Amino acid sequence: MANARAMLLFLYLFCSSLFSIVSSRNLYRDFDITWGDNRAKILNSGQLLTLSLDKTSGSGFQSRHQYLFGKIDMQIKLVAGDSAGTVTAYYLSSQGPTHDEIDFEFLGNLSGDPYTLHTNVFTQGKGNREIQFRLWFDPTRDFHTYSVLWNSRHIIFMVDGTPIRVFNNLERTGVPFPKTQPMRIYSSLWNADDWATRGGLIKTNWSHAPFIASYRNFKADACVFVAGKSRCPSRKMAGGGGSGGAWMLYKMDLESRRRMRWVQRNCMIYNYCADRKRFPQGLPPECSVAA
Ligand SMILES: *[C@@H]1O[C@H](CO)[C@@H](O)[C@H](O)[C@H]1NC(C)=O
Ligand SMILES: *[C@@H]1O[C@H](CO)[C@@H](O)[C@H](O)[C@H]1NC(C)=O
Image 1 (cartoon, helix red, strand yellow):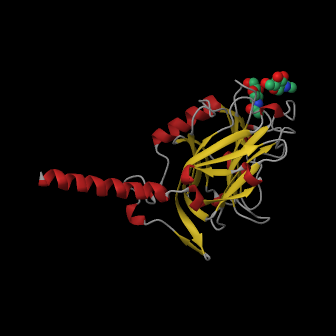
Image 2: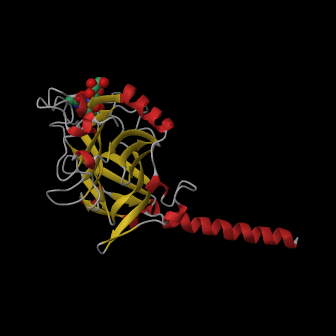
Image 3: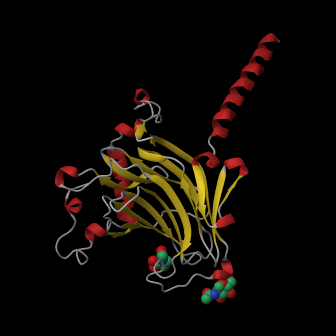
């Protein structure tokens, strides 16, 4: 009897401490709605964020913190149905003319036609590094996890834990790598029917508005930049348990390279490194170094 009570008490304490960890992960705490009036909403006590787009305006949010290296995960469920002309942008960016940027952009499509996932990397204000994919699932049916793993070695774009693109630190060959400018996370849902639909071929069908994208389970295991200093998760835990800074030492193993090759072979629809017409003077230097 006494044991059973102790057990119950233990369970109660255990569960309530779990609850406090879960409930402290709160989108109110991590993000500010930055535009679109009440089109952007944080719901369910901070567990869900939605952006919406109608004929008058889109909407957007940004992170309160700035990050300098980290593993940043967000679950996103994209605009369903006829989403042609809409773009859901989710990216990290620093500020100013020589800014660095890591982009995911999801280009909507007609009902039943696939989204395009457009990615790009800017370093020192220079982008033009577009790689585009089709996803191997319908990104509007469920939430999927889109991640950026950014350490001093590389930036890896991941979808549901599968690496799809890597931007290596090739400073030794003269290509700048983002490593000094802290970045905020931004996301917005907007109308881009002048270019997102194969050069404006298809117009946004406003009779389907409002268009809605949803976000949840944000996780930043990252160095947070506060008052000019970067505060990183404890390195003691690096390598153990998959959290607490393990990303700092992360190196792609054979299995993750194999999975990335699979995605690139089967799902990549555009790669600037293969676009010789666009770069008649020669491909950018990072293209000639094997990833
Ligand atoms: C929409 O789907 C069509 C048909 O599969 C495809 O050709 C087009 O590139 C898609 N558009 C976007 C923006 O992904
Ligand atoms: C827009 O959507 C409505 C409702 O589904 C449909 O009746 C109409 O034909 C669509 N317009 C265009 C231009 O596709």
